[in-house]
Length: 177
Image (cartoon, rainbow, N blue to C red; front, side, top):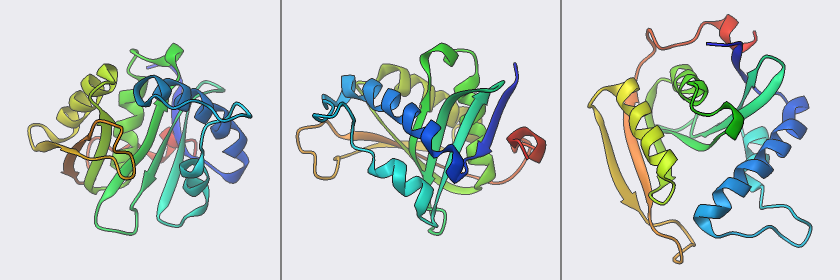
């Protein structure tokens, strides 16, 4: 795989994450029907929480020196980790970049996991089912849950599995350390 790196983002990376966030929310607007606000931005509370809450971790994905995505995890202090937001820029998709990132994030936080996506996002449906199978074999489940405070949206699809540290874990050098 080319020079792909996944690392815990630092506060200095937040401006980069903010720019990637706009692309992520733009992609999601096609599925959720959300429009940007009057200033051209999308709601970004989850982005800010990823950099400020102790039970969350923001990860930055780079290809060489170029930022190509992020993963925001929550629930690190609770019983179940949740992939809160996950994004890979279109130019880096379908080359194993997202799979590498998802597996790397999950390997860093062994235990129960939940990942949500939308049925209308066909790429996410294929991607997350494949990733769950690669990580947990056939030991994963899928269910639909209503989106809190959004009765206008179809229920989210939630994949659940559990993992332990093992061969899929990245070595410290893989994460820019």
